[in-house]
Length: 359
Image (cartoon, rainbow, N blue to C red; front, side, top):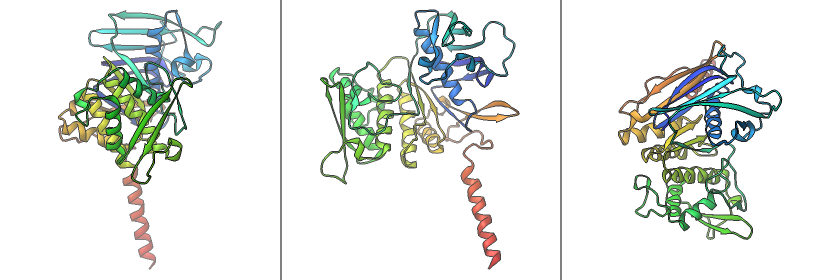
C-alpha cells in the first residue's frame, strides 16, 4: 500500500504531500488538482516499468498532452534537482522520480530514480471515459484496460482460469468470478441478469442483459449507459480483489447512475478495500462518499477512510483532510463540500416567502 505521495513542481502543485489510507476519496471543485494527483501516480508507475531512461508521457497518462513542458508548474519552486518530481512511499520503502524536459526530443521525458527498496504495489486504473454500450467489445489483454473496453473478456477468462473471488467480497456462496459479477450488478442496479461469450476468431466479446421488462436478453445498445458503466467498475473492483498488492484508481464511478446506485457503488468500493485493495476514488458525488462512510462504519473500518477536499484559495490549491468517525460522521464540512443542496433549498425557501408576500 502506498502511504504517501510527494509532488514537486508538477502542474498546479509547486509542492504537495498526500497521505493515503486503505480507501481514499478525492473530491472538490473542478480544476483544483484532483486529476493531477492521479496523473502523478500514473506517471510514476509507468516510469517504474520503463527499461530505458525516458518515458512517453502521452502513453503514460493515457491522454494527449503534447510537449511535456506543460507539466511543469507555472509557479514552480526553485528546486534545482529536476524540472519536476514524484515520490512514492510504501512502508519503509520509497522511490523518487526526477524528470527533466528534453528540448531535443520533446515528446519523451527523461528521468532519474532515487530509491530505497522495491515498491510492491501494482496499479489498476479505470478512467472517466469508460466505454459505453456497444454491440460487441474487444477481446484480449491480461488486465482490464483503462476505459474498461475488455472487461467482459476478462470475466470469461477469469472463469476459464479458475480465478476465485475472496470471501470478503462474495455476495453469494459461489466464488466463481462471473457469478459474483452478476450478483454485484444485481445488488447495485436491481434485477440484472447477464451473459458473456467470446468469439476468438473475431477477437470480440458479446455481453447480453435481461431484466423483468423483457423476455429475451438484449445487447447493451438496447439499454442505457448506466449498465455498461457499472459493469466495468464492478469487474475492475472484483478483479483487483484477486491481485496481490493492488491499488485501484477509479474516476467518477457515479457516471450515469441513479443516486441509490451511486451509494451502493460507494459501499461496494469500501468492501473491495476491506479485501486488501487500496482504493482511490475521484468523485463529485455525495452519494459515493455517503456509501463509503456508511459501509465503513458498519464494518468498523472508518479509521481506514480518508477524504481529501480540493479547493482553490489565493491562487493555490488547498487540500483539506476530512476524517470519518466511528459513527460514519465527517470531521468537517468546508465551503463547497457538497453544500449545494442546502444552498438551493434555502433559495427555494426565499422564493416561497417572496411569492407569499405578493399574495
